[in-house]
Image 1 (cartoon, rainbow, N blue to C red):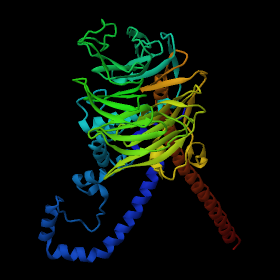
Image 2 (cartoon, rainbow, N blue to C red):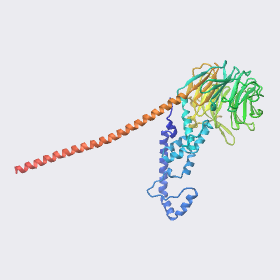
Image 3 (spheres, helix red, strand yellow):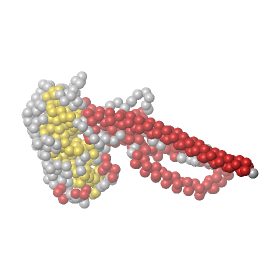
Image 4 (cartoon, rainbow, N blue to C red):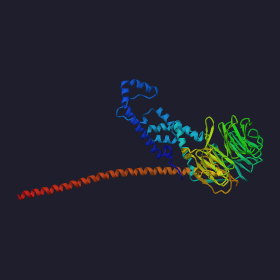
Length: 551
């Protein structure tokens, strides 16, 4: 298992700490030199007109204190407000390094408001409650929440168990994980939408046959929609008092809980939801934007090929059609960016980070690309990395920071950690990027883990907490449960802490014993010297006595 210490996650890596301390020492030397050069000028200014200095300091909020000649100023002596502004420019790792300098900086770094921004940037609004108790401040609880989530993200490299869910009679084409309610929705060629419990792996409910193959499902806490090959969008509204949100067994055409809309003239291949809109993509080469309340079509985005996948974010939407990737403005309906021929063959799958800056594509040639989207005056897209973990088409992608998970027709699932690539920030322009089979092998990154052993096609994959859910051609839904890895790692961390404490105690005893031993050896040596000196003096005295007697 490739875990890192949970404590190291909180305070930063030791190697980076040494580098940071080296840089701080170099900066301190430069600062000391400047102080020595300008020392005479500063002292003369302060002695001649101290009131002027105090007034200038009061303007910027820095209290004036007369430094003693033997007193050495440090970074921690700066005002708390100024230190807080400096900490705004650090990443989580840098804040962890600063927090292990002394107690005052630990308090400032731990209670800094930027931890909330870090959490929102990576995972969005937390599902669980933020308040950890009366003993913690709100900012400190955000740090605790961030460290806990960062620690849990390492579980995908640990042990797992597989739950196999039977119920579908034909291939499963789509899987959707509603992590906030711990629910899984699946459907496929058997025309039935099924609801499962994510933790227990039990079937909760199933709909009646919808009359066509269901290729896409999307849900949130208010709405569940499914799209089929007949071009209809079948929807279920949340039912008050229902712990499972939706009543899939409701009577047909019950307008209070169920609805149907139709405008596509081809099979629906992808669906998505946000707060106020629904999005649907189809083989009729269009994406339609719907109003959730009125169920009316607001915009039609026309492509030049079959639409395979879509991912909305804020006022933009990413889509794949044929081998190209497109970025649209949903307010105006205009195309703001395009990547032509991103893969050899069709670009089947698409995923996007919570911030919308990272875009992932999976193609027919088994490769996966990661792009960075920058929106300033115009939308610019740069390719950061490429993986080729599969020998077949990549049908589905799912992303939850920092893990990108892919499902392919070769029956394998790849797990990719994007943190290292984001740190190095290796970017290349899409204009100069190679395509498909002609990719430079030096720029191809290896996946961190592969889950395999399934010979059939895997059509869809989803992520939720410590679990990966996948459906394929054999009609079986599988849940990879990594919660056991978290429990094992917690036990390993506690045992590691005990061993470290025992090691430090033994080292302390050894130092004490060696100190006592060195003192004893010094005493014995001194005694031996005194004894030898005494013998010499005794022999000399005897010789003197003998000389007197002879005289």
